Length: 144
Image: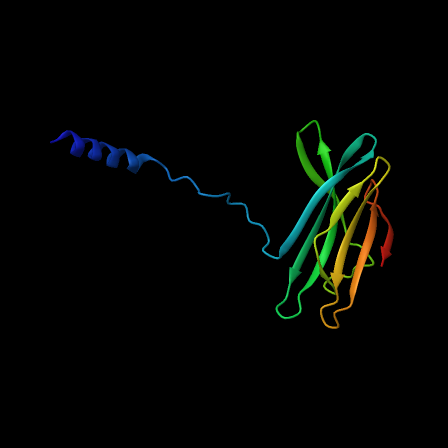
């Protein structure tokens, strides 16, 4: 047997023992999630963490959305973050508005997010400013 043929035979045999590796992460993400924004910082001594805002959208001709604010606990003992609270924003009813991407802005004293929306049937536009607090509290919901 010639050397190139022998090398090819060896590679073929070895490849049969190599397990196929996944080409991408196998974790599933809900396909209706259209925006995820993470940022800011909250503290309720001894707990602390950051905020995450998630928007889901669906529909054909009239796209509508729902939004949740999550408080993510940063656990220094386990080195694993986890959601400790998830809340809707009362002034943004689920599936009534078609929502854009939230924008978080923070100062040393507070974090807020703004989001734009369009009512999908009559095309009324609105925007909201929501102040985020520690311990799962939303305040100062303002619709403009």
